[in-house]
Image 1 (cartoon, rainbow over the protein chains, first blue to last red):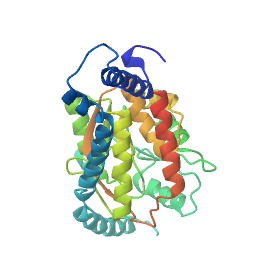
Image 2 (image 1 turned 180 degrees about the vertical axis):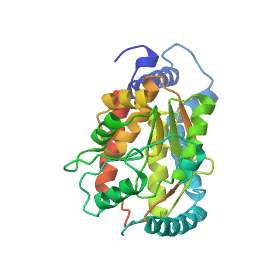
Image 3 (image 1 turned 60 degrees about the horizontal axis):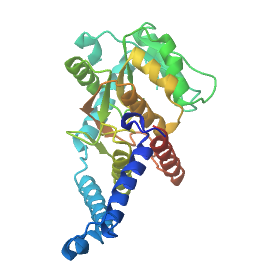
Length: 99
Length: 212
């Protein structure tokens, strides 16, 4: 595992990002840096990871759902292919192909 | 044959691993009809892997560009001029056929199959950020040297092999263009996506995630 961002594996990149964000969140919520944040900030910050996780889940489901719904069904292509298969078979039979 | 009319210089290399469905016989007849300079039959004794099939075929290829495609008509040759046009347009090292963007699509997939396909692609995009929309597709155009280089580096099998080719190409800074294609499944026979394939896909995906 190296520190250079470009040669890191994807796994390493994720772990680094999570460690960075995780420690920042922990530091802020536990007042470790000696910063006294107003309680309104604390109230938002504390549940943030859980909130982000749920949002990510919803985004994933929504995106996949949308992509499945709009998955293009190539009916024309299938019809065209069937007629071309007939054409090709006739053409090949004329040229001596035995099926 | 459209390629003949379009003035593109081509040859077709058929690698058959002893398929029991009469492929060999049909291929030999095609060779007689169109000539052995256009149809190159290079069979193998028994069923070996896809990667080695590519290597085997490359030995006999005399062109500068290689198009890989499925031979069961799920990939339509009508897209070949579009692949070539796209390659020239951006001087791409690889042109990948995509079922997921633009006019791309599939025929013959039920809801379950579509969900699995889109779900798997979504996870792959999140984890690997590959810069290509369709990683498991196998309808692609490669520069000959690029294909050679990539095959040397790839170690996986099946769907994961196709994914690994794109990922390694990204690592080596090869350029990748995309062409929407229509994938007509189940023209002949059944198309099944078993639990085994899903498991090995996930294993392969996690391996690529952890090692690239």
